[in-house]
Length: 440
Image (cartoon, rainbow, N blue to C red; front, top):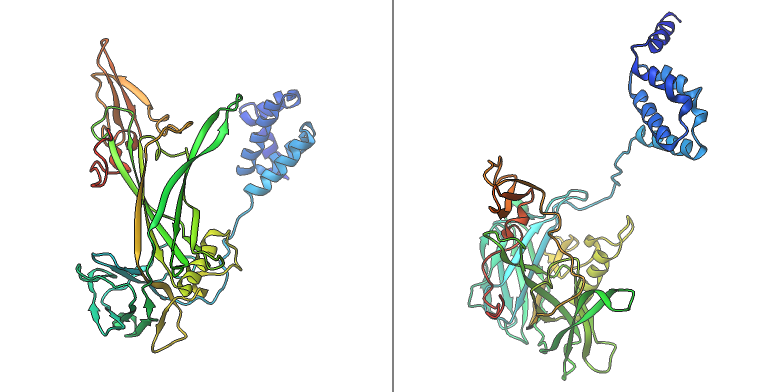
């Protein structure tokens, strides 16, 4: 009791700011702002050594708060005094699974096979390249091709290798002692012919309208049409590479650049249920107005592949896995069978698929004006300095984007984001070989 009495006496002393504030103003807190201040005081009081006694002090006067505010305060206190423990489910997951990625086509040039090992469930890291493997290709005509390891886990065919439509190809893989000296082999995969792409085109998509009904924001949907008169293909897959030019709206050194991205989604389609092997208005890519892809000029190169029914089934299951909102009980990639087996242990899970396909390509340029394009550079102009002032951290933490020498004494506008002053943060100043010269 003696310590409690001393504490109360300390709290009542005229030198104590907290008790002065509460005693002098507590009963006049009739506005929301005062309630908020009192609540902040309560939170601070919880953190100090005397929180038990201060809590009792506030408890006598807490009736000043409105019920809704009391509920909020209670919920907030519960939240900040709680802790969250990460839940990692106990699952039986194979460790160091072989992962195979690669496709053999009928086009000239090196073909790449990537071999790696998977990471355990819950780890945020990329697959680990598997170096030192012996990788070969064979076909049903008795030919064998040795692939060279050009970097860790990346194996390439000779540059003059050209697969032939109508032949079946098998991938052979032997690991070294770092991965148990095992032998893996794919099932033979037939290279089916693929028809050409009939058309690749786009349509504007109205995203919003003004009060008078005129479109105020537009996006762009790219479509593809194709058909096979022989009705032999039936199963299709597409990949694309998109490239666009963009410019920084300031007269800086690296102002004009190009950037390229590969398709992030799985694009597949089958005509097996149709009487005619025809695909029309296949959506390839939707381009939103939230990027700068459509500001100047945009290009998309689409590659069309022919698949076997087995490979189509693999891509279809993988597509469903990666595009659905996952849960603990959704299908996981290790349960999607590929076409590669371990000869010593046929029951071992092997991830990925060895693909063989003919390919046809088509490129589309989009040079059009779209409404409501978002300006990505509205927050670039952060501060200004005198024209002759020294600038600490210049070209390290801040960059000049506007020069105004006149009228004297002049000024400079600075940005804290390098991407506002140098387009190579996102792209390259080297114009692609396929880019037309008529673009500014």
